[in-house]
Image: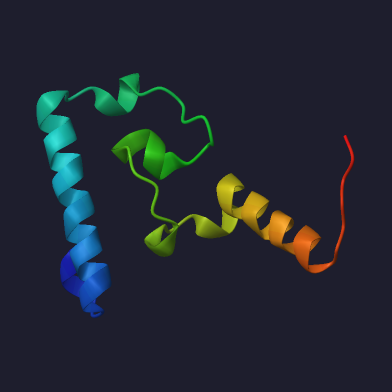
Length: 83
């Protein structure tokens, strides 16, 4: 998987993620089936226990990222939402 990645840091990050996945699967082969849903709907945090938006392949549809973009929009446009 990482052999096709030319950027060294991204390659290192993917190798680290693969190591984490290997450790998790050695400890519990049914981890994917038994994992609890992440409180912030991040699939990476749910499966791997870490959140790395910088190389997530689903970052465009990520609820955490969407919320971050929304909050930035509100701040940049001086919009205050009263609850």
